[in-house]
Length: 507
Image 1 (cartoon, rainbow, N blue to C red):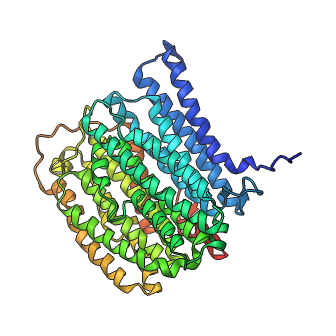
Image 2: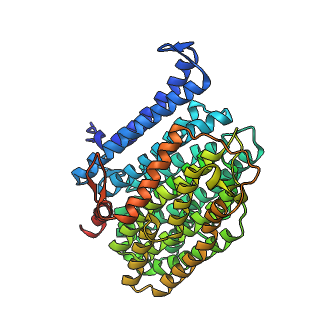
Image 3: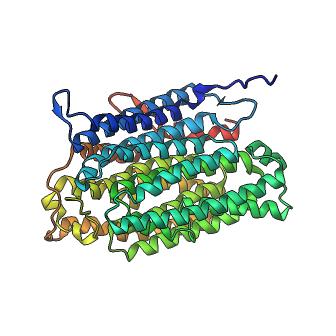
């Protein structure tokens, strides 16, 4: 008789909480839609959407707490010791907490925006939670099979979310483009994984590290296909063409969510894969990552200059930031990986905040997309103009903001590893980026308002998200080592980033 495996279900707690939340939302929508009143309040479509969004926020908050407890406890917990495919360790628990916080803020940002579009349905928040569970599986996976399962669980709900506004042709077009290109990238990635399995005899990261033969052409082809598959997901040049179209066509709340969470999950998974499975090949991969990083930085920044649509500009901006993040992979050091994690946290707040302003300005389902539409915003909506200026300054890397500190850490890692030319390219392109980022503050504060019908009031959820993002951008820029808070004391974000990647270097 085969003994039952000794499974540690507590390792899956973050994913279980998110999965339960998604099922609760789907069942809750069915039950609420059949009721006339709840606690004396009339049940309307807007009321149902708000309740379900609150449910999603509650479960993401629980996931954030569970991940934080796991990170504080340290150590490595494996779901199935006999066949390790998923483990909760300082790295996965910390990144899971970042993903949970990002998704929580995205849900709060979506409530009023979706209500105005008349698409504030429960499946939206269920899809958010299902995609987040896939991301959490990816970052904790130590086996290629688990990585691919997490990747698909992340991607398929986002394909649907990109076309969630079914009445708009460009939203449908966005979803179809993302689905076709994403499926193509998944096929490339899966074929690469199959080749790696063929040459190493296993799919676990440990088996790959032990059995990979760098002199075998099939092994190199497999590794190259895996890198290409991830390059599509994180919008590295020349695999970036889908990004501006999808960002522009998807509902702004969806774009805000996918622009930060997909990047965090994909880069974190790539860090774990390289550190645990292909560590001996870091020198061989350095040249490939160097070229991809330089191309991504240059193309992203140059193309952003000529954009007149703010969502397309932010799309090319995200491509450029992917290039900056790639510098950490080029270094292959604990300093570089730690800088990447810190940069991803900073990027989450400043990019989510920038898209949050776009969402807050949307009126009756019409997005404020043209850069020219921001003219004179400081006179009509001074609060939104102030936070948008802050996010633009941070994305440009101006001192005193999280964006500057993130770039500083990445550039210092490049200096210490001897990648001076890549550093020069990064610095020069950062100077170029100041032009297109400062276009918006200049328009807001130095031009007369156009006849644009912006929404005159900001919803409480949108306001809370913008305040959190603005405070985080300032705190991480001014106090990166110890972020002061009223409820949680000083938060050692840089130290947490170092601890999370230290496990890959024996720390």
